[in-house]
Length: 247
Image 1 (cartoon, one colour):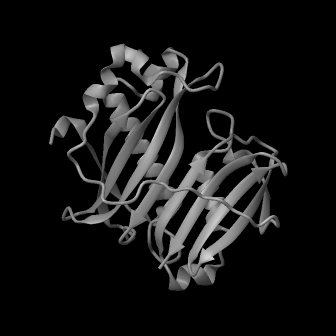
Image 2 (cartoon, rainbow, N blue to C red):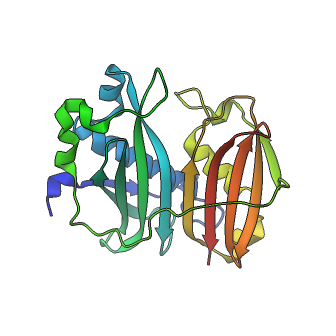
């Protein structure tokens, strides 16, 4: 395995990053994963700042996280990240979440696209820097979880609604991808989190939403402790889908 292809970043589960059970929240973990992707890409010449000079930016398309357990308050942990594959319009990026002794707490898989900031359409990943992004592909490090799957919700009656506020909006002017995670988990009662933990969490993003948009949440219980969720904006376009599996 080529060490320079794998980024490794240390964290601590700060008190303001954990929930009432003392475990790191899924939204904070998701944010850490996205930050690690940014750090790793920037160190190799493909970070946001470099891309912005060319009027490109990275957009998260899919994310799947599978856990043995969440880091606990004050616990030190490490996130490793690497690029598994690069295609013309998207790239596969994986993660390992490790405890202080290097034992796996969980893994994650993500799919990213590079889009034009002007047209908001995908652009050719192999056209930047002469296609040198392929030099950082690492296929000899294991990520032993399933790839993100297909999520489809049949329920036509929303279980919740939310109007996008100031605190939801990121630097790109739309609802932050991590904010959807928070709003989706808010659909479940406190009692659920007192007795269960999240084993697997998936997000699939398909459209952007903006300040003032009304987000409607639809949920199917696929089987015991497994839920598929769909988010629509203004009773129209699907913004994202999610799968949540508890144990």
